[in-house]
Length: 235
Image (cartoon, rainbow, N blue to C red):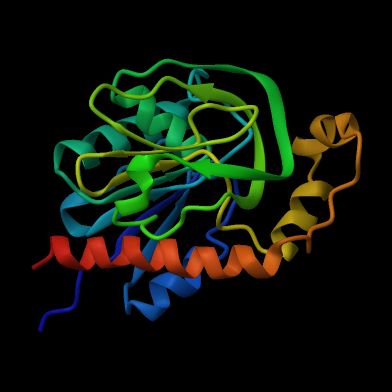
């Protein structure tokens, strides 16, 4: 059987990497190509040569008039038009929502650190989240939120942010929370100059290892299932 074309990974910031998505792709024997838009903001990509799209987070806004943001939104729009499996994390989820007509705007509060997400009834039999019925403590780092795109299925919420996850169609997902982060990534984010303002506002220091073991389990399950959608789309 011919090898599945690589998944395209868009990094909006160099330090916002795949994290736990990396081993999920490897376990599924899926190759990937990473493009760092903070280094190559006007990059051109051939989505015909890719089997899916992953859009990572970043400290900028989906509303910013930055070349790299415009490039990312254009790539997301092309992927959606081609019906590729798409996974957006944090800013990536906001970009998907924006391309699909949803507004992106400031959340009433910044969510930074460990906090539970609660699954909607629709999530209980969703291809990615099936079987998850109890709240799960996951990692957050965002100041903006989005309106649910028209026709999208609402999958999760938190106490401070209504739209934490959605599915559009059968294989397009937006996750506001960071299911992908490893303890090392959290430590790195806390040290980044781009995040210094947020870190200064924290009332309580973040323990990078709190809930990390469970997050790794959830990541393996959820991202593994998304990889299965990529494989199924090639059949």
